[in-house]
Figure 1 (tube, rainbow, N blue to C red):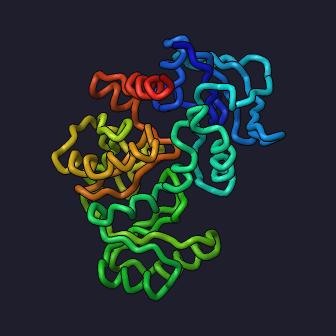
Figure 2 (cartoon, rainbow, N blue to C red):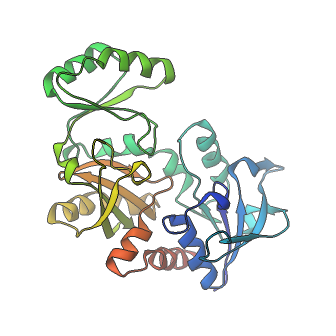
Length: 313
């Protein structure tokens, strides 16, 4: 099977070839003989009833400072391709949402991974609220009095923007912290959406576990240990990836959410688990497969492509 595959992503030159999940997905597709094309979200258009992309043929290799080659730009009718990987990084803003509306015109005739309508309906910090029994105590609100009362009840809390990513704008507010009102003023200044308050989970010092699910099945995990003096466990702010195994609680969480992920066409998903609580379900551009591959001696990108090819058949 030879497929024509377009990858909607931020520019390929920006990726870290030792950590980026999109890079290894492209490598695996290339190894299978699939034809690859690269385009930026801003190069997506709708015209004459067709979804078009100004794209370039792409080849990749695991070589520092020479990991990609792009061919001449051409206009692709995405409805004539086999697969589109929607892999640009968040933020999950109106530009991101617009791409899901456009790609919905071609899916599932052209398989979009993940399903664009379901990506639109499943922003990370909102989709998780469909599983309240798995979450830590959580408040989503713009109401200052409710947020203040939540802090009074739980003492030690985390505040974060509803559509943030990568740990940006995440604050640990301790019981004696006098900055709560100032933080709420700042959030009001920068965001129109409600914010999230969650009970602080001290177990984050032992790590924030990223678990990958492929077509609804648990595929592997990596633990991320926050840097000293840092409340965030994102690797780009210094968290250390550590080998780990799926615990019985992890498997319980995956079993609870997996059927819904599969039913929604969310093939490649990364969830975050702290202290046995599900904190986020990442469906836009999840990462973590390279770290799991190294620690576990597996090749998760091959599993993902097996699923994609089976759906095409």
